[in-house]
Image (cartoon, rainbow, N blue to C red; front, side):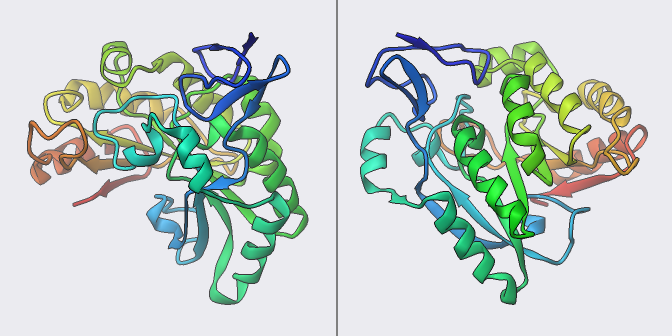
Length: 282
């Protein structure tokens, strides 16, 4: 039995078994990334799709993902790889790329306007070793490395990968413990601590998906944006906030999409406190 210390769960994992996230296992009494280098998705995307609006706008980036996640968002748009209970079968079907191979692919895409690699689609922090190893090689090649993450990880994980990450989009999914604990099976305070440390190391933008009846009150947005408004990126600019429209997905099809007028109103409230606010999915 070995204890995983990537996120607040601290799963105790038996050799050959998987942790809660489905992406970490134990081997010879030591926790390792079961999903290391196992790629389930790859695409050349606009950087704005991450979304990042103030980091190399107009450029492309090679987006890659594996499988597994340490949250259980009922509206997940990538549930087939994030929520899957069949991680071992996904591992068998995934293409395996070493960090050297992935960096070679990314390097070859410079001529098409690509600036580097984005770890996305599933939760990249549960495969932090692969992010670290690939990011180190990418930096040596002058490539940019981006991470799209839920921010649910211990600060020691961030410390290990931070030297190799140029930008992050971090989900700040809501601003109440109830929402994180009961709906997402997560930990708001860990995410806030991760964000506060991340802004010291790289460019950070945040995304809040507005789910009708859950985190859509003006009061919550005012409190969230006041907190975000106090953050500063390394260049001294405020941290951008993406206020994003929900669409019914996965296990949350019991309600319609967020009203566009509400997104506009919440964005207006956020602008009272936050330097850069963008509306998404509108």
